Length: 148
Length: 438
Ligand code: HEM
Image (cartoon, rainbow over all chains, first blue to last red; front, side, top):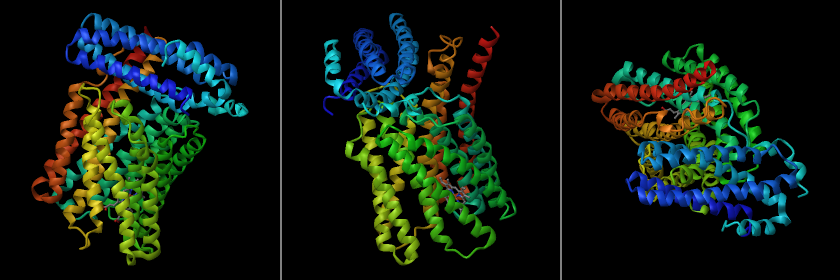
């Protein structure tokens, strides 16, 4: 259990969540510099997370189970939706437009959380079970890409 | 790996997108109407209704709220949430909701009408409609909960809550039969069981089961302690079960040991309320959040109800009628309506956004959820809600003064909730038909 896909990627979710909230709080307090730094850190972490999933985990899962149009497809679609919203947030931040940033971040928070919920409750445990013996090697590759 | 055959079934596709938007929305949009009916009824009847919790007006209002508001929203939310939380979408969710919703609406109105008219032939219709609605709903949800792959504590809470529902319904229908056709069965025991399984089972267990999952996520709090998350709902369910068996077997003859079980269930609820309030104090996000406010109100009310429940161990027997009425208000409005409203303010804007963004032409029109329900209107509604809890409790104690003002404020809050939700729905319809034309 300590060395599972579920644990590694859920921990990474938490790290992304914390950076995201820190950025939101800073915007709320009109601290635009802190907000910018936190938001950029969040973007790097979130994009890396998506890339590792789409580049390593999902292909391995699809190959092992033969399910191509199942959960991984839906997760990819939600990643795309979030990437679009991240762009919105970035321009809101650039324009120092507090209402726009916080309005969109409300959407992102809910989308992100329900996405994480589905991954942590369903997809990751499924992947841990399906990939069984291949898990350690997969974890190694994900760590090499900076997910720790 | 040898399980891979299992993944090719429907469970493999279970991380699916939401059901059609109308599946949950028809339930969500109806609930404030029933709240308004309950309020107008209390306004019309005035102080007379508050003489006893067994008055026709209170019984009708109780069920307009318990069935027409709480159960209404909970049904829509379960149909919506099962794919996300449990990985088990409800088969034919669209047909299920289109079938169940009108039967629940008409059945609840018929039941309320029967209470008010002092027992007429409407009861048979009410029972047929409600019975059919619950059979279809419970069958559909059970099928999906049995398939659920996620082994989480949340799924367990949902299963136990849905298990409490048929008990509540069968007990309620038995009471109705006794009332209407004067069958000789122990009415008092059955009422207590019905109430406990309805509020402490169906409503309470669903709130805890879902709450341990969604409170940390959407309200950015630390997680619930593992031992609590894993064991709380089974503990409460077992306590209710043990108590029910004792009551049925021994009737009023076994108050001591039965009291210990109720004590345990109340302790579970008190624990949940206290932990949730403590977690909310440690939430990371500092932006004012209407959902957090509603949940806080709900948890304070739950704590008050649970403390009353703990007091069953005190000697001295029954509490006076105004206290019993206050307990019911805190349970149904203070706890149930608060928690449900808080959830609606999160889920409704998100669903509107989600369904718009899923349309190729709807994308980019609306990224900001705060444009869907105005923060100011939601806040006004929250303050009206808080005021109406206090006024309704006041009406239980001093009906002569407060019955009508309390009912009036309660009507306003339900109307405003309805307007807020209907506004979100109109916006969605407008954008969809607008993009269809252009
Ligand atoms: C098919 C559905 C239901 C039917 C037919 C039904 C029927 C009844 C009846 C006949 C009574 C006793 C009335 C009397 O004293 O004469 C009662 C009481 C009560 N019911 Fe229901 N009920 C149903 C569902 C529910 C649900 C789902 C809840 C809660 C979530 C609920 C909560 C209550 C409460 C709290 C009382 C006690 C009222 C009081 O003490 O004043 N009922 N119900």
